[in-house]
Length: 87
Image (tube, rainbow, N blue to C red; front, top):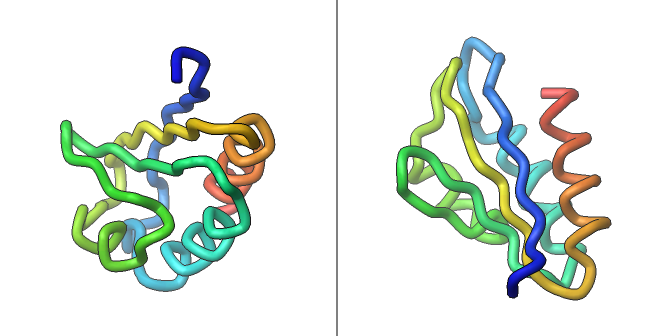
């Protein structure tokens, strides 16, 4: 929709976005009805699909755009944003 929410995050973990944080994000995203997308250098991944996240091969210093679109997008972007702050 027109009103989708989006934030930009930078990965600070020296190992990048590896399996453990990807799993935490995946589990959180699955709790929301809205679409949850992670974009790196023009490539999109559905955060609800763990293999899609891993497929982006996110390294330390990479900048990602997180987009949530749907009825509960406000709650979803807040929750996912909070997770990135702890990674």
